[in-house]
Image 1: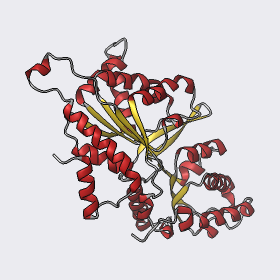
Image 2 (image 1 turned 180 degrees about the vertical axis):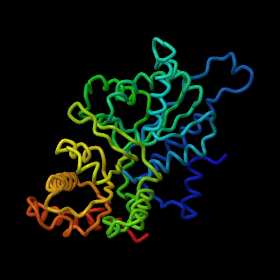
Image 3 (image 1 turned 90 degrees about the vertical axis):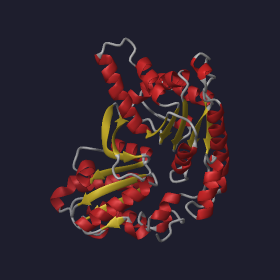
Image 4 (image 1 turned 60 degrees about the vertical axis):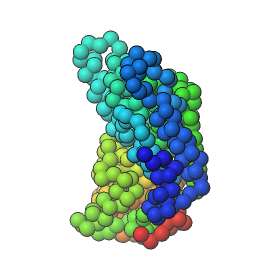
Length: 362
């Protein structure tokens, strides 16, 4: 069985991945963990009667989007010699957990979390969770006890996140109840930052591709292609974000990217707090089917102005399909003057400098 380092070097030498000095410390930790997992595995007849050693300390790998966290974790998962093992996106994992908790409560279990953690631990001596991000209070209130249970039953956890542990569930409702989980991460997982300056995902995009006109099956397909290139998934998962004690529904989310239609963001009674929550939780917004707006649609135009202002101020990247080029979306009406600024910002948000100077032709 190849080591993590050897497999990384093989892929680098073949040109499948680009060498990055910032990834080397993470590779070293993953390689060491793979060896620990291999040597600590119970074996032989005595394994049935001998108390297993405590699981190796896991890893919490954080860094900006596109730095290679998922690639490194997936490489580790493919190489590490341990069974059973499981690799899953964090939000899909939590959806599975909630289903299991519901079933446990239906069977009148007094403490639903304990048996669920025990069952998951049986299925995964190594659990690799991609893109940990906690925005839902329901997740926040159970994840600490769930992880405690998994660790106590011998599961080693490796997770990636765009945020350091101290930034998880920031400004969330009743966050003080979540703080013990942050402490648990610091105690039971080795926290390592991937500080690469290169956003590799941005190299998959040409800046002029990010505002697509007119509306057509072709532009829909091009937007879908960009979604796949920037998220590594064909379809995101639904997610809810807490906004002033209520929930803002995100139809599709994948890591720090979210996908909406114009109707979902600008035809509903949303306002600055909602758009600010999007800018705080996501780094790329996909916005589909921006229509041409006549003067009668001043409310939709006003919300669109607010949305673009908020995304612009938050340095959020935008991928959109539109019936018209920016200057022709809302040429006249009550908010036409403010819309002039929106046009300017939409054009700037298509530039290579906005997306990052590392953008290359792909």
